[in-house]
Length: 279
Image (cartoon, rainbow, N blue to C red; front, side, top):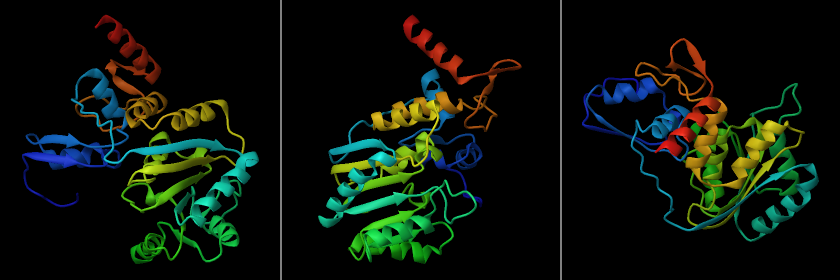
């Protein structure tokens, strides 16, 4: 991404949501065909799809059938969740716990990897490993290998595990302070579950009260595993970004649909609904 790579006829960008417009343009130039792959397309691309400016091929079936149960957990529901985790661990399965930050600080309302690791170690001594972006790649790789090989069963980590992580027998994922994660992030993290097929449990843990809009967003996430539908929700929340040919903002209000006027995402939704009726 940071050196001349020559010209291509076709460029395939996997995990599209992790790349900027400029990065993709640098690879494609003015002539290459671009194929973008993502479980959670960025709002700008989603708007292009809904406008008909980008062709889309939805992949609606996985190579292995899954049964993922998603739920929101408040402090009153912690005990049943822990009981299920213990059942899974005792059966030899793996658990992932995702935290919004690495270490503790003055804000004790947010769970950190360091504090959560200590707490889980007291519950499952010797079965815990941790990983965050401050660690060397070799340390992170060793922690993940320990989980894969069964030397430990519970991985506590930050979003370094958001994509690209494949742990066999990963049956449970807990996202602590789930309100601090976006729609796309939550769906990507959930995508680590049961990748070989079968059952999986996804818990969004909310240790603190959240507002109505936040709860509405999280309820939408746990109500469906359809990434395409969640991407529409993400676009309605964050805005479609700059849709002009020169634009590189991938979310936020668009200033290019109506000259000199910022267009909120809600207006875009209404426009798409009217277009659907007309067509």
